Structures are given as C-alpha cells and as structure tokens.
Length: 269
Image (cartoon, rainbow, N blue to C red; front, side, top):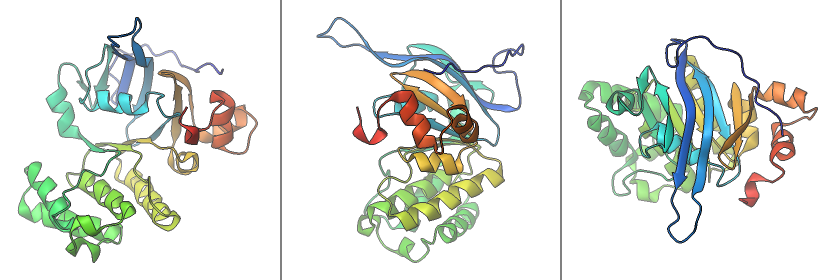
C-alpha cells in the first residue's frame, strides 16, 4: 500500500486563500446496535482541494466516497474532525457553506411532472434568483448540453441519461463556487457521457472548484487534476493521474486503482 505524500504546511488550518476545501481528520462511524463494533465508513481522512481544481474521489462501493461528500455538504454530521469550505467551518458555519456549494447527487433529484425547463427554473427560484437571471442561466445551460428541445417535455419522459444531465444543470443554476458531483454520468450512453465530460471540463474555465466521484476510472483520468483513492474509509494515495501512473509504472489510472485496492470497482466488494 502506497503512503500518502504530504508537504509540510505551517499555515493555520483553513487560512490558505488558495485552498477551496480543506478536510482534516474527518471520521464518520455508524453504530451497529446488535454488534459490538461500529462501522467506520470514513476513518480519519485529510486532504486539500485548490480553488478551480477538479478533484476526483475514487474507491470501490462502500469505500466512504458518498459518506465523505454528505459530510462536506452538511447532510451528515461528522463523528470527529472537520472541514473548511470556502473559508467556513462545516461544523460552525454550515449555512454559509451552503450558500457557496451545490450538489449533483447520485439519484436524479428532479420533479417528473415538470418539464426540464420548469425543473431548472424552480430550483433557481429556490435560490432566490431574479426571473431575469434565471432565464439567462436556463438558456445558456440548456444550449450547452443540447437539451433545449427536450426541455419542453416533462422529465418523466426523459431517458436515464437525460435525467442525469438535467440533474447536473439543476445543480448549476445558481452558479456555485464549489460543486459536488456524485456519480454524475451513471446510466448515460457513451456519446452522451462524452458530451457531459466536455461540459464538466469546461466548468474549470469558469474557475469553479469541483469534487467528482465516479466509478468510471477513465472519466477521472480524463477530467481530474488530482485524484484521491480511498478504501475502507481511509485515504490511500493522492496525486495527479499522470504521476500515479508513472509511480506505479502502468498505462492507465484503472491499473493504478487495481494495483492499490486489489479489487474492481464494478464488483462492489
């Protein structure tokens, strides 16, 4: 198992303005009443994500990826540890954190009896955006992912891939500084997935900070500036895909993953 390479940092936790997300000793343990030991879903991970970075969080099913995202978004309270997001502590200033972030969850969070356009407009109104600004954003977002014509239909008529794309656009309506993408391309056909990759990559040009979890290792290799691989709730390695491939003398990030964890993501072990 490779050791995490870390650089000494004398700056106070959360004080570096070039860092968008700083995670420190984050833990989440679930109590099992009928057994003698807790489930250590996340077991003391620490990492930093720079402003404008596209950061991948990889690992097998059950490794702790979604639990980590849920803590950073305020959906779960950490057992121990904390994180600073956009300069705010998730434990003390969660409302401030929520103003800066947006989340594209694993399951499509759209209303089936609203049209695609109405879904995006509704979530814009939830962010208290003006009608003029909502209209501007909706037009831009729909054209970016070629959903303009489909946006006139109710979401219940969409394919799984189209619902995923709509889910992503909903998450972007408020122009968040920090975006969490949890398995955003699951269920998409290869053509739509590639189109969505291009769109996600373009968000870096808008200086957005993105944390991406994915089971498609080639997706992380193509998009991410750096990736962290976690397993059994612990962070194993963190570096750029290129450096990880060089370090392990392999030709793909998937080979790095298999070499480190010894199991395939698709097996869900």
